[in-house]
Amino acid sequence: MTFRRQIKHTTYVFGSLAELLAKASPPRAGDRLAGLGAATAEENVAAKLALADVPLKTILATPVIPYDDDDVTRLILDTHDIKAFKPIASLTVGEFREFLLSPATTSRTLAALAPAVTPEIAAAVSKLMRNQDLILAARKMQVVTAFRNTIGLPGTMAVRLQPNHPADDPVGIMASIADGLMYGAGDAVIGINPASDSLPRIEGLLRLLDDLIQRFEIPTQACVLTHVTTTLQLVGKGVPVDLVFQSVAGTEAANRSFGITLDMLKEAEAAARDLKRGTIGQNVMYFETGQGSALSANAHHGVDQQTCEVRAYAVARAFRPLVVNTVVGFIGPEYLYDGKEILRAALEDHFCGKLMGLPMGVDVCYTNHAEADQDDMDVILTALAAAGVTYIMGIPGADDVMLGYQSTSFHDALFVREAFNLKRAPEFEAWLKSAAITDGSGRLLPARADHPLLAQSLLKSKALRSRRPA
Image (cartoon, rainbow, N blue to C red; front, top):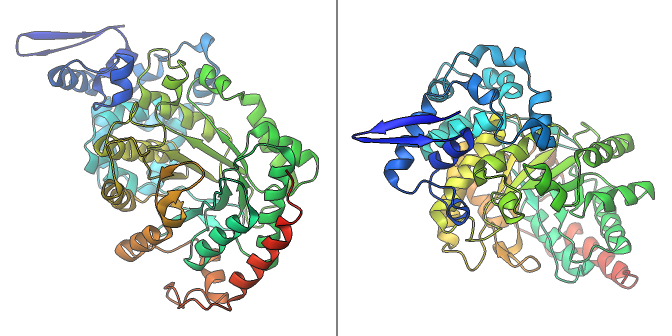
């Protein structure tokens, strides 16, 4: 199938839907690197105009990666909700954009529509949108999940407390956790990226987090972001596992490069749900994604990096996650070159994930060799808050000393809450008040050096360090 559009005396021909989607994408480093993007601004405009006229039915019938070649494609098409698709089945991509932006289209309408939206449909409509369109449409989308607290309610924004340490030292980790909790962060998840993947080390970290949560009766969930196969082994040993983490991508080949299959994720979800550790819900999966992962694995099948990214959301959607996080600037400037490209990708990812029914968070971040700085992150964070982002990262000083990248701090979360009048997860908000960390309005109280959280948590971590596994 080919697509055509004439501008003045030039006719632009796009030989496939994948090519059309790639040429319609806003410029970004990864597509340039792969030779997929539009050669000129005029070709980019021609592709957008041609894409606007494509019926949604055509996109549904034209997989960018063949059904027989890719299990993600099979998942997308086999789980597509035809009944939910009927209200938009007659629309073109351009008309779908107008539908999403219409004041008559409500949050309830969009929630009912989510099972009908394939990744290619979401990616296509996002390519026709300005940044303000992505913000306005995403703001109407609400996705609510639960484990020990409720995430995604209107007027709320959660924070993942990320207390990484380059040596997995319990004292350093607990100091960061105590710091974050005293700033009111941690309702999305307390999640550690381990420096080592050794089974004893991961088990020690999980027990450390579980002890803290149980001792202080914190209504939140813990996760050590290790490979899903490691987590399955630990579940089998009876180790306290709240959430199963895994990085996922939008093609079978890219997921294979991560060492995972869809069946493996299904097994992990079932194992975690069987533990019944959630008190108010059983959304037990935590996924991370990022534009460029399929391209970096040479597993993109000629599909642009944003469309590949949105296909990863179909993988995540199949397993009813508590949270999904696009680590938007982490892969580096080879894929998103500067602050402008990172901003665009963040808004696209958040919009597309929410449109497909996912509880979408964004790690507003960059690597030190990217053409970006913390001022860029402030702009991105503010735009995402306006768009209703589900959660962001909370890292001491915004500087991850283990992963070596820049993200958002506990203070950044306070800024967003103040500027947009955003609350925390309600159960967590109530706990902060009962723990004398916040007042009745959710504002921080002056920290006391003798606060039990500071004294007891650090004393406990020192005891644990003396028997930390190698």
